[in-house]
Image 1 (cartoon, rainbow, N blue to C red):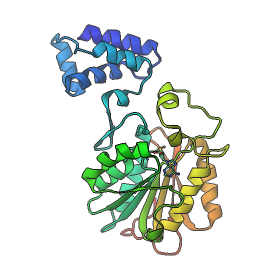
Image 2: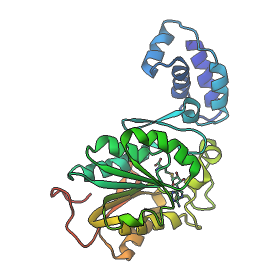
Image 3: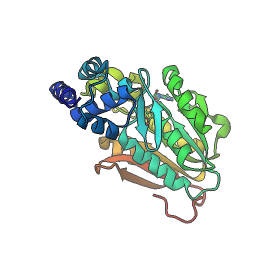
Image 4: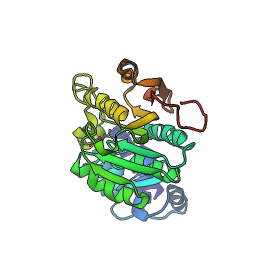
Length: 288
Ligand SMILES: C[S@@+](CC[C@H](N)C(=O)[O-])C[C@H]1O[C@@H](n2cnc3c(N)ncnc32)[C@H](O)[C@@H]1O
């Protein structure tokens, strides 16, 4: 097995896969139905590579996303089913979910909505980590919803098919938290990684308009509509968009606090704001 892992690692490195050894191990672990730790132990004992391993490595070398090959993506404590037609959740979005969880922790029965839920990653993580939360998830894509449905069912999340610009009008002014990781890539910024360019749905990537800001702006306007006074909005965006998002929120004149947040590598990747017109509904903690 170790020899097969080394050969796979070389093949994946030559193909430009960013983490060739990890992917080589995870693909073998997936086929054997064991953890990566157990796989390493098996490799040390001289076990044979599993059937079908070479074919799976070939697919990864063609830059099919690892998560499409294993059929799963880990997001915080949740394991989501993913595949063609749905955006693969990213590690940096776990930081955005953390902001939601921190904010909701001080509330009794927080009402939270995830706009553009994709696989359901943020909604599932929040429902999992905030006991008593009433969580909604909005998504327009039929294909994404086919993945989100089974992912969110165990968590009791309310799934709503619709446009995030107009969703949930019957809930106006009632949410404690609105979170979104909307599409935000500018029209002419074609992603370099084949996993993204060829496998993430276009609808999940491009935000609309030359600056990619149409859907982020729509999400901010919807947040101002859906939130109760003092409610909290947090949205992921590209690093370059941080000042534009902050400027747009300031110009709306509806928010008391606009704060840029960094991801784990220190990049300005999300912005939060508190809706004016009421005291923050936390237990006294300053808005983040
Ligand atoms: C960047 S992906 C994020 C998915 C997920 N929230 C995550 O963080 O992994 C954006 C999602 O928004 C959805 N979307 C795009 N336009 C939308 C719209 N107008 N209304 C609702 N959802 C939309 C896409 O289908 C996609 O699932």
